[in-house]
Image 1: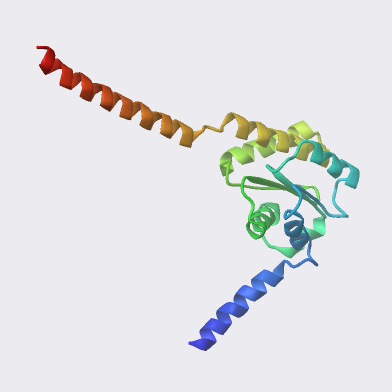
Image 2 (image 1 turned 90 degrees about the vertical axis):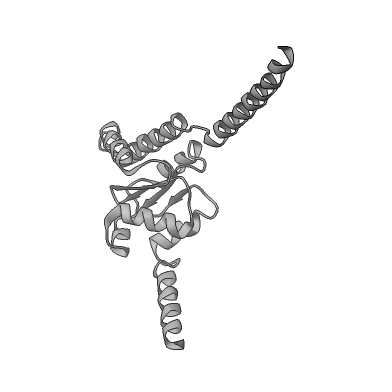
Length: 181
């Protein structure tokens, strides 16, 4: 039994080391501990272009600019890289990655089908410029989240208060009716 536990721990350790700080994925994960925009030299956008993103990207969505070589660190393409970075960095919300010139996305807030539509629209709006495409996608995701943010907890509390008030009112009226008659 101890051999099975050792194998499990070894497997977990190798997964944790797979994207250490020597990889683009590992550096992005590390960066998201303190910033919302990660930039890796060799990316398809310049450091100045990536730096401009901090003016309109707060914490959601996060953005990672990675070199094309990052695609060799994980099978599955940019979407898989986005998912891996989000998982390892324990991100909430949405993550947009640019691996070379290829977009990748991951989101807890926007469903996959809608995210794919926003990506297509961003490619058209970006006109072939990687920075403009990422900016269009980020702004679309931000607008999507702002328009689709229904305050469900607040709405639930309001409905509960309304139901309780209706119950009390009905109960009081029910008591007064026999006495008034």
